[in-house]
Amino acid sequence: MKQASTAFSGHQKMIVALLALTQFTVILDFMVMSPLGDMLMKSMNIKPNQFGLIVSAYAFSAGISGLLTAGFADRFDRKQLLIFFYAGFILGTLCCGLANTYYTMVAARIVTGLFGGVIGSISLAIVTDLFDISQRGRVMGFVQMAFGASQVLGIPIGLYLANAWGWEAPFFLVAGVAAIVMLLIIFQLQPVIAHLAVQRDKSAFTHLWHTVRSRDYRIGFTATALMSVGGFMMMPFGSAFAVNNLHVTQEQLPLLFMVTGVGSLFIMPVLGKLSDKKDRFTLFSIASIYALVIIIIYTHLTPQPLWIIMCLNVLMMAGIMGRMIPFTALTTGIPDLSDRGAFMSVNSSLQQIAGGIAAVIAGMIVSQKDKFSPLEHYDTLGWVIVGLTLPCIYLVHRVSVIVKRKLAKGAVVNTTSVAAEV
Image (tube, rainbow, N blue to C red):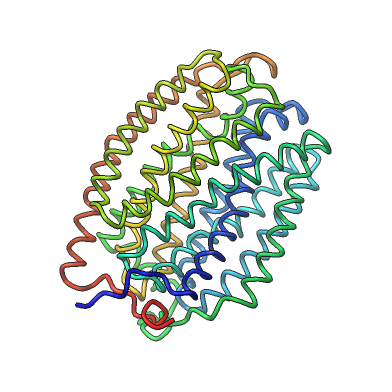
């Protein structure tokens, strides 16, 4: 079977840019919780386990939302779904900025998660529909650059605003940028409707059931959930560990995140290209083992010069994204065209729920005598991540086998005309 050209057309580049901007705002909204963690814990006088619940509230609501919408995900134009959920995400982010107590913040994060948690799965479904599998590693490399951009631009600017005008300011920044991005989506993105022609299920429940009962799909779901538990475990208390254990000041935090983000911006496109040229499972396995070594070193770290902490953060990010990009590119090859929206929604839901569980577990493991004392047992998180990563490598191997089998049968194709003619 002749594959589509591996070069991106002008329209495809525009699609990648729009999806990257969308992911930038969603990731920034989630990622900013970590650097704001120490500030929020002191401002609202909350304990580590309560902050873990604030983080997990987003994740759990996002997971529930994804499961509820999975049956409908392949029954509508993906562009319209994206606009609907993006508008709700903007509303929820505004509510976060307006929250003034622990309980109102939890409620605001639930609203944000209900809408924001589905956006990633819709974006992945659009990528899978409009790009050939031989291009998806590079697409994910560019789209995931939003992660680095949020650290280079969003988080430092957000922290600067937070230090100047309070922790609420970053949420208003995210909402404002997201409103501009939504207008671009409305006027620039074309309808994505090819999947509507191959729908075979009459009801949303039947469609969801057909998706979750597939053995191949369940292997992908399990791998995603397990990797997400390990991936999310360190994140909620990253800034609190840097401030209270490594003695990074609040003024140095923006620089730390910015340097890490700059490193990501250089690393991710390279990883995306490698993911399209090399065996993705091999790349994932090497990156996983490498990441574990850096994570163990970092979680056992004592106060060091800032430049050493920066270097370790960049190295750790390279390992984490070295896992994520090939894995995400692999999972896009699992679902059939008719199931892509539902598969991505369920997959995203499990990712969010697993992340929420990870945040709760981390909050139970990590402790702090008072809000100015060092975090205790942060090193334990590193060993827990090691224990979760090893079985995850085995599951990703099974995902790789499934995708290769489908490729051999010619089952992994994109049937829209965009990849071939725009």
